[in-house]
Length: 339
Image (cartoon, rainbow, N blue to C red; front, side):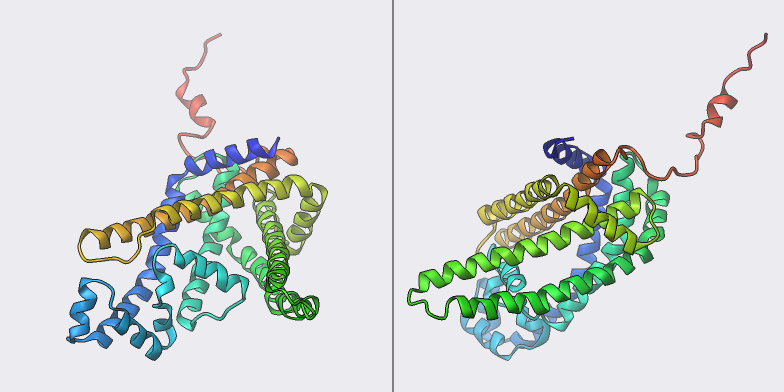
């Protein structure tokens, strides 16, 4: 199967399971509402009944915003100008590329989201591998079966990312960059070198992400209990077809870029009262749904590609037959033939 067919089939599997997208969106919403409420409370307490509060209600009061930002700590530090419109995802990319620290409250919410996603990942992959409805009982049963297996795999992924961001990142963008640009007299040349090093680091992060994605897929499709074995099998799978696996990953990454481009085109600027505020909120929520859809497209397309490459198409451990799907139903429902 070509990667183009795998890409298209993966998107169709995602579209065939809208409940998965709805569930992941509700999960994201439930985890972010407490943070939004806490930040709103901090802003309300700082504004009080002052004249700045009335000005902020009519639009953006930059003087007050700078004052709040200078005094804020923890979660309040996230309420910065770069949270408006398309600046928000660009800021997130910059923080990731520079391995910047995040507030403890945000890190905790991200940790909870990753834990919940780890639980759901088994059911999502099982649904895409079967390519047919599994009902809530089957979905959450698969989620429970693979949850602790994926937790073990997550520990290995955490170690890999810790090495990347804690060791490789500093070596590439601090030590190596400093040595390469020590004698440069033109700032443009130094910028090009840094951009190339960012690309190299991004490719390393993508490679690690790719391998762990296929480790999860192999664990679900082949019902593997050893996550070390699943990881080794994923490395072999990618190493034997690096251009196809990497090409599919690049196509899916391009899908994420298209989502970001669409958000850049429609993202609102400074919100005002009334309809413009709700328009900004609606566009932001649509962007979150689109990002989740793109993430699910990775699972769907990579699952299709893996099944096709190893002749596992349509295969996953069969569930226990349930009435009226059991083959016995046809026998019971058919009249007996008289010889």
